[in-house]
Image (cartoon, rainbow, N blue to C red; front, side, top):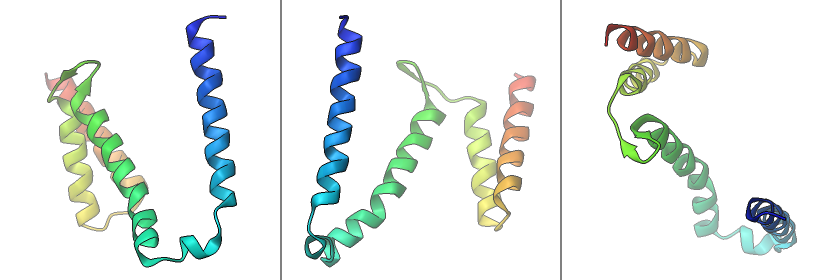
Length: 102
């Protein structure tokens, strides 16, 4: 068995145990205001980190390219309260336009 399969099986077991333990936590522990605020912010932080990594990283190096323009256009569209499909299409079109210009 290769080291990759050992890592896959180990991470699968860890993910299952985390999910199982999460369902076993008493509800009174989760009703605390501090825990509720942390649970509210975790998805926002994870999504922000994903957007940041996907925008500025290319394998092991930091890059600034057309993806930054796409994210910028998406931010402007969100600020103007555009619907989600319009935000995605505007970001894709602007990013593709800058890519074709360079």
